[in-house]
Image 1 (spheres, helix red, strand yellow):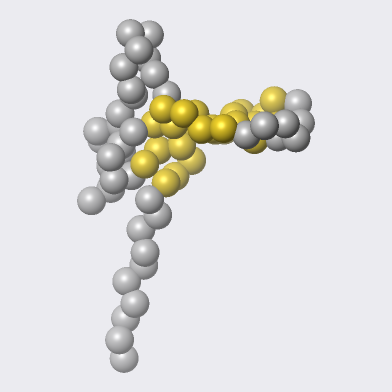
Image 2 (image 1 turned 90 degrees about the vertical axis):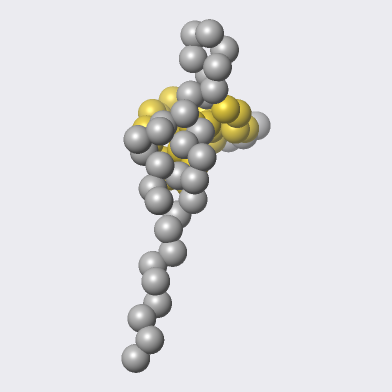
Length: 66
């Protein structure tokens, strides 16, 4: 009777690379377009904004879902 709207995911994995017992991910916030670098594995985990060569935050303007 009532259709549920599919909830849009806020964060999506743009790229993934395995590194030994862990992995590096580039995660994009679909609302802001900001790219984050995230690591996982057996040691400490972390996430930080991904920066370009000039130290500016990388933003995907075309990848933002409205």
